[in-house]
Amino acid sequence: MKFIEEVVVDEFLPTVRAMLAEELRDRDLTQREVADTLGISQSAVSKYAHGDVATNDRVANDDRVRETVERVAAGLADGDLTRVAALVELEVLIRRLEAGDLLADLHEAAMPALAGAEYDFAIHDPDSGLRDRERTLSSLRRGLRTLTAASGFAGLIPNVGSNLAECVPDAVDIEDVAAVPGRIFDVKGTATVPSDPEFGVSEHVAGVLLSARDAGLDVRGAVNVRYNPALVDALAADGVTTVEFTPVEYGETSDGTDDPVRAALADRDAASLGDVVAVYQTGGVGVEPVLYVIGPDAPTVARVVRGLL
Image 1 (cartoon, helix red, strand yellow):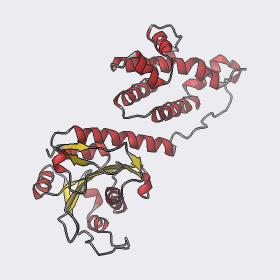
Image 2 (cartoon, one colour; image 1 turned 120 degrees about the vertical axis):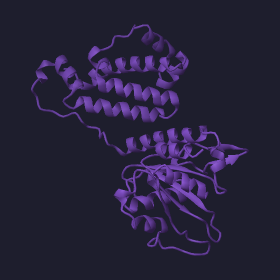
Image 3 (spheres, helix red, strand yellow; image 1 turned 45 degrees about the horizontal axis):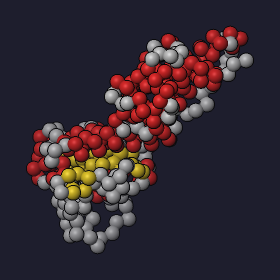
Image 4 (cartoon, helix red, strand yellow; image 1 turned 180 degrees about the vertical axis):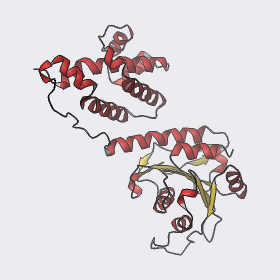
């Protein structure tokens, strides 16, 4: 009797680890760094590198395996994926390949009596909330790298600081939105990110993003920058729809039913606004003028802002 988990351990894992080790070495990581990244010994990395570990050609040549390995290796090497996020991606792949697919075929080959049996080993949810959150954080890190690497971005940071945010696909509140704790600030001409992104740490940018979603826009990313009429004109010239809203001024209160961003966007046909929208306000009593760029994800809005420099 052989369990499908044994197929995973004996056939899938050695092959994928060998592929990951090779991909990471191709990205200039040392054997020690590869070992630390994969949580294995340096001697194991050496064995993978020299082909001393038996691998399965069917697993190695499967397009889905290769795509996942390349994506995970790139994310680990660039710092976009944590080890937890990488594990989630590979676990999801395993469960998908177990469900009447490649791993199930290998299982049947190891146990011919299983051929023709009706079973379903898809015990993990490929669309789990953990996966969505880890993917969102990974996307947000890519966007942050785009912003902070852009020469001149620090000059676009308002006095209250900037933030870049991205939400999970089914976001309903601020706890579903990831952003930079403490915001991004201009420190002597350098855009400074104080710590790694987290969920539930942004009020203003996350609130604008959620308001846009409430207005019917299919968006998940947002960033705020210093307001300047020239920036609004530049965005409009690039085909970005610009919408002005009236802020809630200092001392005023809002019960949320008259959310100014949602109200301004709700008056427009969401389908005609385009993938990226800029909303802005020109200031008020105790309110600094600010411009928000909203779009499908954090890397997209970061690239739009970079294009303004």
